[in-house]
Image (cartoon, rainbow, N blue to C red; front, side):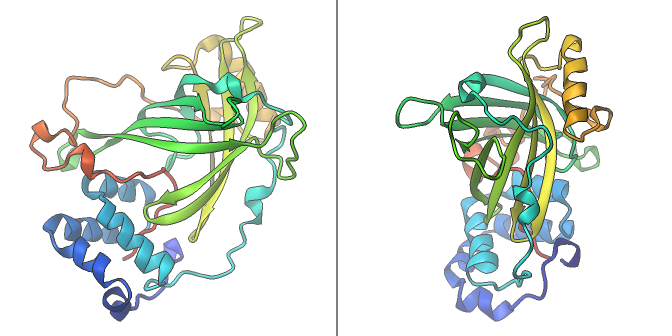
Length: 298
């Protein structure tokens, strides 16, 4: 897809270099539907995320990895400039206590509609460092992907884990200025992402706890960025908003441009990935995706 920075496809490569993955994917109608769904999205992120919610599987993940990244059956530009990812966001905390993230946080407000605004978002952090310190964190991620009403409505539940390495620790060497970073695969493609915590409250001085996070990342397709607010309640408390607004301004962000995330999470409708809902999609079919720039083709 031109808009998604992907170029011509080498159809022979699908069979010659990725034959096993192609056979596994297209051996059932669901795999064909998944590729067709992604093709219709033409790189539009929200659309691609819905496709993975409905048709995502390890077979699709492996096929995209093989055909796009490993053997370049679908060509992508080389030498994409990702240097902006390592440019610190203004006012990022020089030092950060990662233990302050331990526990459950709600994403209450987000900036980028492609990545930040899924319903019912919460993240749970546990220390993962081998020395018992929180210099590395495992983050549990939960959110819902809505199916458009014109397609029948409803939602898919998603639950996954991401590993974070904390850079902004005491006496640590942190030339990028980032607070923490992560890397892995999403939609079959490798990604790198830097997080910058640009504001926080520990609950003192009558300001409820919050973290204001800006992030920058990239895949083979290019760069992406956004920002969001963590709070201990599903809705950011009004008493925290002035401090969040001030921190956002100092980081070059406008809090008025953020959108409140819907964390009401109504339970009167079954998730579409519940096998009892009769959709044919179960939680075991989900891939371990991370919301970000997707590897899609047309």
